[in-house]
Length: 229
Ligand SMILES: [Zn+2]
Image 1 (cartoon, rainbow, N blue to C red):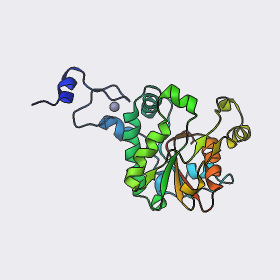
Image 2 (cartoon, helix red, strand yellow):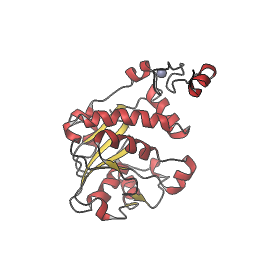
Image 3 (spheres, rainbow, N blue to C red):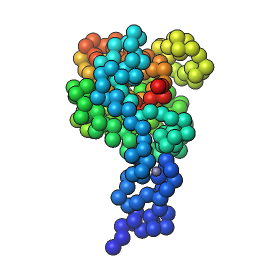
Image 4 (cartoon, rainbow, N blue to C red):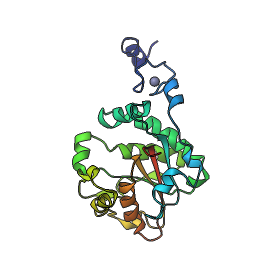
């Protein structure tokens, strides 16, 4: 007997959001070929890597890594686009779980106590329906055997104009807008701060500084993609 999902898939086969090819029944959200070709960084196994260097001289980060290199026009850009703007939460859940497993196997991320996503402004959250970083953070927490707290950090002001500003101006622009509503929930913890993409690191830096202001907190960073070299 066919399950209902299998019955429908006979007529509407699921396609890979990165290449458009029909998925085999044993394939998850992304086809095996695309999954194999996604440009992994391996940064989670190196303490000194291009993502950790983003924070040098700026704020105290224990360990930092990104799962993939972000190439324009590539498969990962397709996946992130469908995830963020086409409502495909399942793509974020699939890739986030993959990366959570990678991080769980790294000595650098072994003593994480909790996972916290970069918050989205409430207005943007209403437009998009979900916070992409919170989707990633929730699934990454699983393999690390810790909980995800998407209320630990809040954003109080939108920063829509930041893309046209210099790094310093961006830092000023975002530095005031993240806060920790309840310090007791994070005191003394090693927090894994999660975002979808890291470019200049300005937003993550502002978030990290808000967390680091609480006694005994240590911060590490993990993102799905890295746009730098
Ligand atoms: Zn594919």
